[in-house]
Amino acid sequence: MLTTLIYQSQLSAECSDDFLRILSREACEKNRSMQVTGILLFNGTEFFQVLEGEENVVDTLFSHICEDLHHTDVVELMRDYSAYRRFSDIGMTLFDLQKIDANVLTDEIRHMNQVQNRDLPDDRVFRFIKRFITQGGWYRSSEGFKSSQWKMVSNEHSRKITLPSSGQTSLCTFAFQPIVEPISGQISSFEALIRSPAGKSPEELFASIPPESLYSFDLETKAVALQQAGLMLRTDEKIAINLFPGSLYSIPGSVTLLVEQIRQANLRPDQVIIEVLETELITRIDDFHHSLKEIRAAGIGIAIDDFGSGYSRLSLLSKFQPDKIKLDRALIVDIHKNGIKQAMIAAIVKYCEDMGIKLVAEGVEKQEEWCWLQSIGIRLFQGYLFSRPCLNGIGEIHWPVRVS
Ligand code: C2E
Ligand code: MN
Ligand code: MN
Image (cartoon, rainbow, N blue to C red):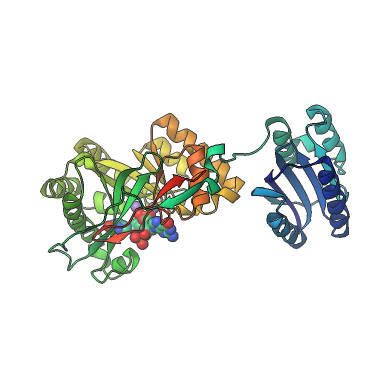
C-alpha cells in the first residue's frame, strides 16, 4: 500500500555542507532503488522528511533512519495512505532552508507534484510541509528538558509509611500512589487503588462481587481508603478515590454517606477528590448531574479519569468542567516519539490552562516521556517512574534531578 510518512529530527553534531551533500547523494540512490521518494528539509538544526513509497519499504527505511546517529529525537509526525503518488519517483531531494527563500521553496515543492489535476495546496501533506517551512519544528522539548540532563533519585522527600491494616480489610485493602509535582518536589495528592484482601487487582476484585451489590460495595469500601488516608495524610495533603459514577447516582444518599466517611476519617471534604472514568461519565452524564451538584456543594473535588480513552470528550467538557483531568496512559506512552499525540496533548494543555483545570499525566514510565510532558507545560505526574502503588502505605518516591 502506498504510504506517506513524515518525521522530524534534530541534528546531533555540527554538520558540514559536505556531510549533507554526501548524505543526500547516498540516500538518493538508495531511495531510487526502493522506489521511495524522500523530500528532506533542513533548517540548520532540524530535519523534516517526507517519505513516500510502499508501506513495508518505508517502514524498514524509517527504522534504519531512527537508528542513524547523525540525528537524534526522531518524532513521527504523520503516517497516511494514499491512492496516488504525490511526488514523482525522484529518490531524494534535500532543501537547505538557510539558503533558499521560503516562498521559492514552497513553489518548488508545489511543482514537484506529479498529479497535475490535483490541487496540492489543498493536500494535507503539502500543508504539513508548508508549516515546517514557515514555522519551523514541531513541539520539541525545551533546552532544559533533554532526558540526558536528568536522573531519577530517591532523596529526602521520600517517605515510607506502613499503616496498620484496618478492621474492614476482610472486604478489601488499598494501595496508594502519589501524584507528584517534580519541579517543586511536592506531593500533590495520593490516589487510593482498591485491591482484594489477597492483593489482587480491582478488575478481579470487582468481578467477584455480585453485580447487584457492586455499586454499594464500591461506595462502602471507600470508608477503608479514607480511614487509611486519615491516618497517613498531613493536613495540607489530598486523597483521590475512584468511584463508578453509578455508585454515586444509583445509591440514594451516596454523597451524604461519603461526607460522613470523610468526617469519621478526620479529613476535610476539600482534602478529597473523586475520580470518575470518562467513558462512564459520557454515557450517564444526565443521571450523574444531580450527584455532581451535591459533590460540589459538599466541597469535594472531582476529576475525570482516563481522559482521552473515551469518545465525544469535547461534548462532555462543554457540559461540565472538573477540577482535574487525568490523561489516559494510552496518550502518554512514547509521547516523545509521536507527533500526533503531541499535537493533541498540546491542545489539551492549552484548554486546561484557559479553563483553570489541573492536568495530570498518568502512567508515566520513562524519563523521556516526563521531559516532553514537563516542557509542554504539564506540572502533575503519576506513574512508575516516580512511584509505584504501595499496599497500605506510600512507597519510595523518585524525583528527577538535573545532572547537567
Ligand atoms: P486508574 O484510576 O486510572 O488508576 C491508575 C492505574 O494505573 C492503577 O492500576 C495503577 O496501578 C496503574 N499505574 C500507575 N502508574 C502506572 C505506570 O506508570 N504504568 C502502568 N502501566 N500502570 C500504572 P490499578 O490499581 O490496577 O487500577 C486499575 C483501575 O481500577 C483504576 O484505574 C480505576 O479505574 C479502578 N479502580 C481502582 N480502585 C477503585 C475503586 O476503589 N473503585 C472503583 N470504582 N474503581 C477503582
Ligand atoms: Mn483513578
Ligand atoms: Mn486513570
